[in-house]
Length: 444
Figure: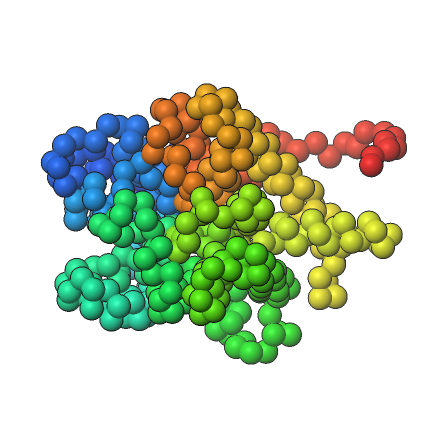
């Protein structure tokens, strides 16, 4: 796999894209096999491609219910694709090379650096090892905590499989579940009042979504927050804010009919899962349009860079807000924690926002026109796809093949990243150092 990724691909960005495409195609062919379905039938290529893309891009949007349609083999393929997609294709490929004892060259190290959003090439092999060990440890701990609930309900062996499956799916922010045996596409709604399932799954989502470099800061410095990288400080601050504020809203305005404990669990879980896990313990169609719109915004924001999550990223939001505050205060540049943000970073954040909004709105408008569905419903689905979330208002399985292709493209874009695609396409273009004459233009 490692040699195949680097053959005729000199750009790290192209290697990342090709790697994801190869894994998606391999997963599609495996899911097409009769052994992958409980009915023993061949799955159409487009449906298998949709499921494979959703798994590798850790999204969770599905055409077929995972528990009732796919066999044990098919479910195993899906969870393997989720694990590879969550950790990153390049990271997993690099791990095999490291375990084999082979030497990793500078080009490979550069690719691994881009894949996990590391600040520099130095120490990338050590960081990759830390990521793999931490991920497996957290997933194992999550499975152990979930096992008592699932084993009590489903028995020893099936309970163990359910615990492992949902722990990996939650940590990788995928949102795939096996609860369709109770009701198709029901997600975790049957556990709305269960504190173990709600809290453990939510914590797995948060840990997976804060980013590999943030883990390293926490592991190295523990509670000495001042010693963290500026990026880690921003990520933890924004993540906490984006959990707290929606939780307060949902508690006071959306779940008033539930008991106090269930209301708290429902509010907390629905605030966490849109960034970008795809599980839900509440019926999302029963939420108000305001509640659905808040979830849509959270899905677009997503998790943090270098994590298992997708979306625009928490740091993008933070940079844009800080840039706006700098303009209001007539400061030259935005800053966090007494550190100035480079103008290049502000430009990249604005570009990412523009790309996500354009694709999100265009996809929603096209699907709404093709399917004759309400625009807010379609925007919810496209936000879920491009944010690699997986939450749905129940329309994805009924969409036509054109709309499915649109969602596939959005899922791939959301997981690989807009700047990665642009840098891959323009990697052969040389920058021009010449500067044109400047002239002012009025904005606002």
